[in-house]
Image 1 (cartoon, rainbow, N blue to C red):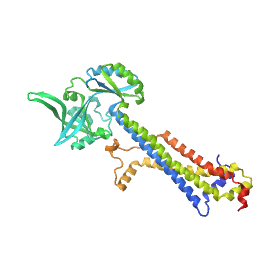
Image 2 (cartoon, rainbow, N blue to C red; image 1 turned 60 degrees about the horizontal axis):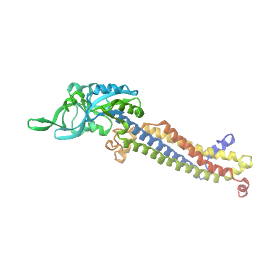
Image 3 (cartoon, helix red, strand yellow; image 1 turned 120 degrees about the vertical axis):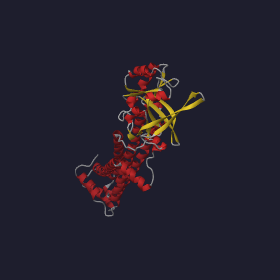
Length: 415
């Protein structure tokens, strides 16, 4: 289908030596630029969406686990035995028993709602704990100080940092000689951490498990046990097995039940965005077709002379298909280059847009994640490039076929 021999020389001449008015050449350049913009937008936007989906899933699963086992009545009494039994299921890689309860935190007249997580002492390690970064203080010092970890947004709302104290108020009442009252204690802030999900950063309170059990008067019990699997998709087989083992001691929830609507919307939006952005490439391809039609009209006499000199209709068809594919390929390569640069300089591009337009491109309170990241899906990128090449080839077939069908006798009669 591509030009060979003298056909290559003719195609090269049509590409590098435009007509005197230069209009067809300009149209070809604009067509290549249009395809470049379409390919760039498709790869860049899909990479942003893929990075968002992957990071959001990773943060949520890192915080909630793949399997969550909860006790009937809110407590699991013999949690060590149950955890050991469930940990033997194939695919389970780690276990995390913890307590979780909603509280109110206060500091110097400020109050904010939070979610206390009572974590085992060995979890208080900046490498083990699934966080983006430690903003202030030391995670490891929390058990020694009898202190707590606060999410970055929660600490900001309360106006505290590492070394300060916060008062935690439990909604559970305690009986006193003067009646029931709320239970509250002051704790030092050992560290301020950033988990990476705005909603978690706004509510997270990490507390050593023994202290949480004492504060909430749970005794030697926990409210939840998290399990992490080798692969998140193993939940379909692992979940029923774990529920069978747990029996009536606890019930099992899969990670798909957490924010299931959100992940469904993200997947639907990803498909629709791919379709919409593909239309940009389709429109750009039509421009290549129109520029080739104009080139065929301008080169009618040349085509007729080639035919009288012995060139076949197939040769003429291959010349114009080659011209169209070269224009399309140039646009595709330029689009790949632009998308690679945009992804590599993503932070600089984000800062430039925010500076010029005066807007917040990535608001964590709306986007959930505190950072924007692009992750290239190579299979998706390959489909994008293949789609652009196929559409370009299809767009060249009609004008190339028209050039091949020109009757040299009729053309030269009026030249």
